[in-house]
Image (tube, rainbow over all chains, first blue to last red; front, side, top):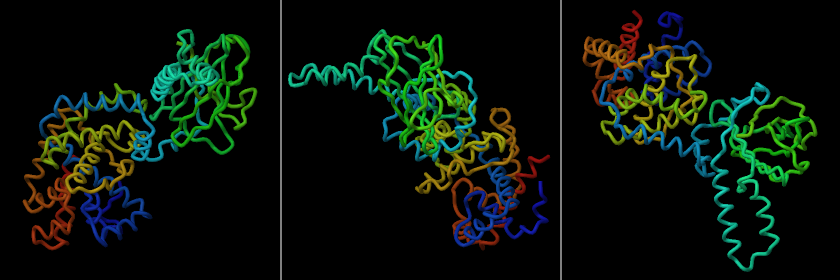
Length: 269
Length: 164
């Protein structure tokens, strides 16, 4: 490492030590921050000083945390992983900063990945069940609206529906997607969460991978500000058995044949 | 914890929670508040593990620094000053294991004990009470320049002790 004492930055040496401990304030701090913006040597020394300070922290001895803390943390984490109401998702994203910038969309391996269902989807599921029940109770409900709802809900609620789970094993927040597919009705509902934003004029395209033959286009979606997207009942040829579902990035209008590598994939459970 | 797996987080918790809690408690002196900081630090790690770059240092050291900063902010009732991604700590021996930490703690206490008491006090006031150099100067009645020199010398002494 650079012999810091002998360098021209000696004048900043003491201020750096204070700054490393967040103990520098006022004009000295402003001056140092201006200098740090353009001085890699000083930034390096700052890191080293923070490490020295960390020794003070690391060597702090004390009682172990209460046993309940561990479960409290795991409960909180499980709650975040499974149920992310829009407002809390916004909050966690504000804290974490722009979390999708690290995930260059061009750099994916085409390995098969397992995908987990977003519980947001399960909330929708519950809400759908409840609205179906409520609607059949209401005498004023029109038959057509009921029918539309039933058609949409069928792949989710039907025990015959094929449920495909997929998980991308990358740094969280993980892209997640779940497809509910009713083959005999060609009915498909797909929900995705934590999908990274895309360049303009691009969209995620879903593909139904049949047991034989080429993947079939199954709709496109662009993630919203929270990375969520859905596809509901895209036109599909009847009765196709789905071996798997896959996602690629394509032009926003969708393409009949995939032009880019698979970025997410999942097979039936 | 690049996979975001909950069991990986549990493992990290088992490894580092005692450091994090100890630092938080040392700063805050209150078990409930320390527990809250402990939760906050690990939740932040869960939400954004990309904030820690493993090539730049040890996770234990990084967690200790983050914890200390968060605890000081809580102590002084400020909004968190340091973005969790901004803290990069150079390679420091990873002191996660209890035995390693115990050895390091002994060493650091030795270094602190050997220091002039004014130097030790200045370091502890800055580190564990989160006081700025002007606050330390006004509390101790010492000139600003003296405080700066003491703190710098204190950190240098610590660094030298772990370089051998």
